[in-house]
Length: 292
Length: 326
Image 1 (tube, rainbow over the protein chains, first blue to last red):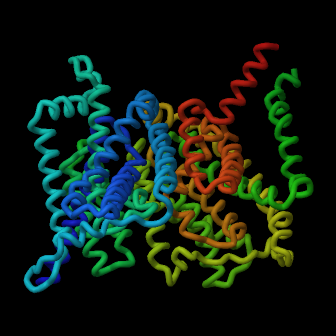
Image 2 (image 1 turned 90 degrees about the horizontal axis):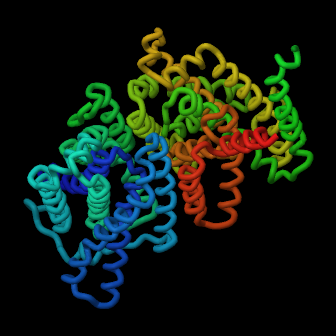
Image 3 (image 1 turned 45 degrees about the horizontal axis):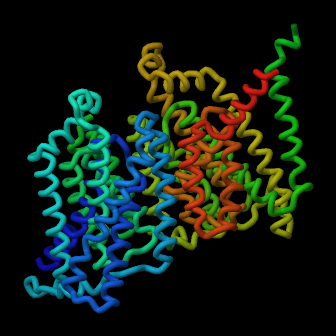
């Protein structure tokens, strides 16, 4: 029983982070019809910025509370990068075939991966002190790191916020309208350029937040973004590209399957995930929650 | 009158013959390092030629061609390790067979989609192979990869000196295979089948109305494309001496796309030009800085922004300008 509980919590932990990454990817695609191959790199930037700022503050002797406040730094940094990238690099491509959009974001991926290497060097960065400061709690006799519970909470809160934001605010209405019909929204007076930059920034913020909350538990390493992107793809393929509900469901499915895979069939864990994605596509081409 | 009729042929021969002479003479003129770089370029050229049957002629952007290239390379490595095969011809046959099987399996799923979904799906499926190669390390050697020794060509034992073997014997062998591949692809894209693919690319609905079975045609194109990539992977394995998961990972698929765009995917020879140019670019960028990805990424972004038709598009533009000024 404890065994199941611990694994269940681990699966939720993993799903939370995946939801943040894949939700951002899906939001950007839903609104702008751009599949950002560099999305994983923004997640990596979030992780690196948080690890680096917490590391610097810890070296300066800051107390744990300050370190905790620095946690969102990565998310803010990723959002800032996104806010710069969208108008400069992506805007010229909206009218061009999507092959070019994929290519330009692939170029961006190469650039960002190396910039991370250039700025933070080849060694992993960690922010383990935050993780340790949370200590551990005892769940029916087994010790479990309390920080992981905090990550799960952040994932759930982020999902709730996003849902409220998109379905219960005026901005959300405009965002959904733009997503459904960009020309019509534009004709009705929506400043589409502004919506695009906002949507892209929010998507990048989510990816950065994913990186920021993951980094105390595990180090920021080179290539983490590329790996994360592939899993985010699996999530959005299962859930439906452009759908937040889909990203949520997909993240849970991938999280639980992956956790079961690590415990039961470690060799084919990734292959099983891709297989699930392929089956979902075969049965429901647009994904579980997608509109064809 | 007869001159007029043969004009396009003569014009083609006017650049094919010098290029052929240059390729034949290359190992004797330039050093082994240059020859090997060119050799890598030719091998990738075959893969990108196959890739472009999908992108340039069928209008499908695959982000998963590393799967078929890697399948070809690993087939060679497995044949060496488990069946003690040393004949290059058997390697080529085995690799084409395996990559055809895999691309058929993946293709059946992928060709149901177009545009961005096709791209994601090819990418995700290619990563299945990568994760298997990565995880089953007792079979595949994991990240260390599997060693591929020098093969025998046409039954003849290879030269003892590996460099000499690669830069002469193997170079001419690859050049011959490359030539055959170019001719086969030329025939394919100029056949009724190739024209049907282009019709599908330009207007799916109309193509369907005139009786083209779209999915079947796309699947055949997918499999042919995968076979070319697999063949290239088989040729690459002895050249590299090692089959590693690096050629299965999706960023390598990205490099294949890069090559096609660099050369210009609207032209028949664009992919080949792109593959050779990319190989040189990468070789020098890697030698020049550890941040070669930064350099190449910037090149890609600038290319897509300013020169979407690639090198061949630029050449065509120049040729047109010269003609007009005459």
